[in-house]
Image 1 (tube, rainbow, N blue to C red):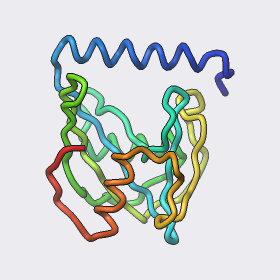
Image 2 (tube, helix red, strand yellow; image 1 turned 60 degrees about the vertical axis):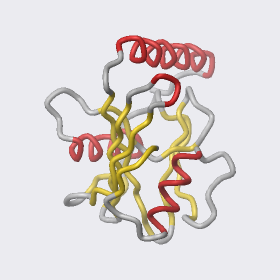
Image 3 (cartoon, one colour; image 1 turned 90 degrees about the vertical axis):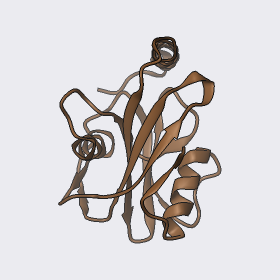
Image 4 (tube, rainbow, N blue to C red; image 1 turned 180 degrees about the horizontal axis):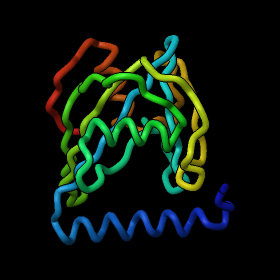
Length: 159
């Protein structure tokens, strides 16, 4: 089901309300991102409620491991069926704007593409040359990809 464009402002509002609620509650957020790389290209997504390109990812559900969450998000957001276990690249924290978020970043090139199941949250998805990213890629996504290209692993840093 494709969400009509008129619904996008409501999705953005829901995202903002959730962010404010999380900041006020001072709960720690645990999320994942997964870098899907094939033939010198990286898969990126653009959400219906944000303006930048990001790696697929999202929150870790109750009683779900971060690795399983990354594999699930890859399947839901872009239709990637991850084979085996992706590599953990790093753990990142974000305390900007009152946040208390922690994100685990995984990477894999062992996946097959199918049909995405998330048709309301993701406005666009696509592979981009890893050395020629879109101008509107998020700053954090750009930093993570550059770290990967520089051979950095087991990073524990700010997002």
